[in-house]
Image: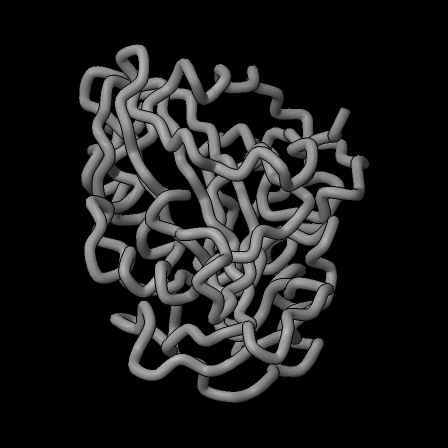
Length: 284
């Protein structure tokens, strides 16, 4: 049996998988994405990888044979990390507009909010917003926020390594996904409130995740990020993805990026949508 990878190295691998890369060109050819999907199929065939993410949450079909139990309700788990991706990684609900193939490495791809903001909400903001490792965010941008929970006894912190503990080799992981659109609007949701962390009944929680954005679509999947465009993710995750978009004040997102316990100050890249039924679990 292979030596069990340490918590830190697992966390570092996950961070790498989520990291954005600077966009070198507007859109690579469809053939580039097709080759990546073919490589993913080849590199996972017969190797026992579990179901993958992200996916179209409106397509229930999947035949992956690696089954694992859904993680507990988030109220019985510890919030360990919050981060977001530039454009939605999942497709469905109010975010089905394809952003394009991007640079083939996770930038400028994914899915966009289908609706429209007002002219006032689209007013550009001055200064850099969450631009430590990528392009500055701007009014009208779509983000997919991941609230990550762990069954391990952990505390909120930087990277998904914060979700792992030396005393729990195989913690259950749950991700609550919420797609947001950024508006220059002080009356929109305050992201600092949405991402507030409190201890409730002995568990670290994000109690202000929007509750009015539709019934979450639950399915079994994996971690995401563009490093997994051609390789399977080995990490098992229970997903709950809300189908409706929340409008959030971009100024509050800037404030959060400037100061948060997760040390998040940039938008992560996007993994290609997983479409191979052999890499998808059935949605019941």
